[in-house]
Image 1 (cartoon, rainbow, N blue to C red):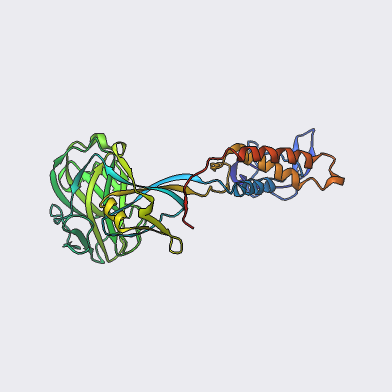
Image 2 (cartoon, one colour):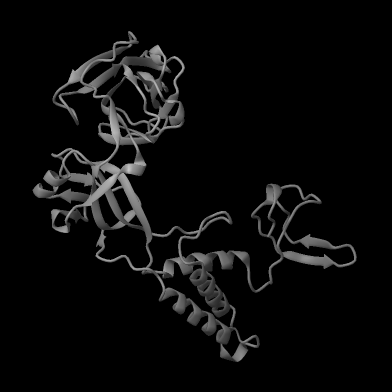
Length: 364
């Protein structure tokens, strides 16, 4: 197995070796150029690297009782929405909480137009029906000729946000976007001409409100923010963007309260989280924390991180490998089957120490 340069990861069978010159001959030519500094690993013929790699992932798959714990705070209640798409990757939920208190301050409620810096290709209006908080949301209609980096800004009373960590806001787009197609700008000078914060908006699904949380890059410098800007960074063509309730919060001071289990359930077919009437009332206009699990990932490269107990994966992989090369009781001079049984027992010991996630509800 070649492990560097243009041949990194390539596996070739060795057909000859000359000890006097330390020359290795490969049966099939390497893909890239072989150099003096190239590194490699020599594997016993019985233990092909591809077999070991396959057995590692088989070991991970066999850990059927194992989940990788996960927390997710991408959902936000509004007091009315009862059905939420469960974020991708989550396969089980065992606890829901809502953010009952937090240190934070509003930057812009989006109940007024951005009138500090405007652009003729952008038409603004307040939307009292399609909103998430307050009396309205703010709608930007971009003409087809808006082009890249079209900017609109609004002045605000000077505010020190240096003790906060994260910007939060609602946003919706009439077209799907990629991450960083849109940006929110915060500046201590008028017109957001030299922003202290250039906050990339994550990817958006068309016509779907999303609650966005983006870490502040330079909070220590944000002592006198006087301008909030919204930048159409990538030319998406004609499009409409809605924004609502821009604020900053300190993640370290957030306090969470549990939502009783009889106030929420899961629609398995639709993969939706559903809040009861009482659940919606309790959550209200608050951030929601999902606690549950995702399945551990398979490994495909040396740099991948194992999400299952290392001792279990090692023992199970060795057991699987020894079993595959044993050849049966009559042709097993290396006692591979006996050694496989030893490592299988080690794997089962490790498996009994797996943590359990109690009271979990399946998502799929």
